[in-house]
Image (cartoon, rainbow over all chains, first blue to last red; front, side, top):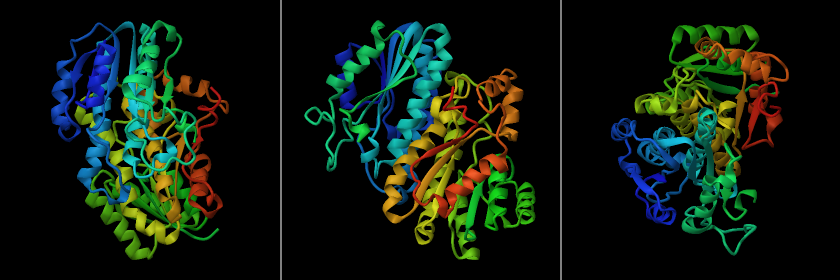
Length: 206
Length: 251
């Protein structure tokens, strides 16, 4: 298994939990097109992983009104993460073996909690649809591609009404989230592709 | 319906032109915000002939200074802004690609025009839309809902716009500004280029369309845009409205 991710502590723990090799992406403040292009080109030849997980998260969550962002703030919170997702999912499609599976682990605010997180909501939807696009392009060679969303680091604020599974909310990356990833990578999910699984204890439905 | 002042980016042709003419048909003041002045002026004249008042303003949607200047010029002349439509997309949009083969420079071009352009439009237009209790409208695509195997970068930025609409509608709702998107399927120069690049695409697209035809940019897409910019949709926000002949919902 290969985990393509940024150097975020929760994702390092996920690599350990899944027993995955780690392909490191730069931090978002360093994820310029110039920095990502050599990574994209260098991993062209790698292939053969049965399972690939992609998780390209910012080092920390920022919040604030969209219209108060300056150009650099916007780039850090939206453009560079979306660019990284495009590059990372492209690499995943190269690295995964025929008949394998890819999971995009997407940090996504529940709609009710999305105020002040417009760039993050934008990146999340883009990453989810990248998974759907790859599910279509790689499906003919037996590759399944799904997305898992989590709000593990985005679950702040007043929770009214409470999430359906309030006692477990927002769910831990190494626990509930890793479990969903294992399921989607396994043969038990052999008929599942292009789907989105929200591991948010029911928050998305609020 | 009260006459409104609206800006439409990328309106020098295609769907943007259709939206501009549809808004002009009910007497609105429509600003064609585009890079190509000749084509933009021609569409402005079509808006005049439709019954509105068309004007051209130079705008590169990916450049912060250009977007800010365009909005400032419109407000200076009109004294208000009721609606902003971000329709412009990268010229690379219809080019079939394999995601893994796309350079970061090309990916950034997609992101800059569609996603950065949406941000720049939102930031520049917001105070004026608060004053008018107006609306922001983003043009996305069915590709941004279900993905596209050979148009993955385009699908990703169109999806990112949908994510922005949902979150921004919540962020701006208390200020009385609505944010929506349209996912159109329409005949346009971009669609024609996509069909030329992938000949199998046209029968595939039309075969899954219950109405069996592409939408007309004025009658089918422009009318929906005009509704979302008007007071008739005063209670509609945060949505992506498919105007696609049922392609997305019924296949």
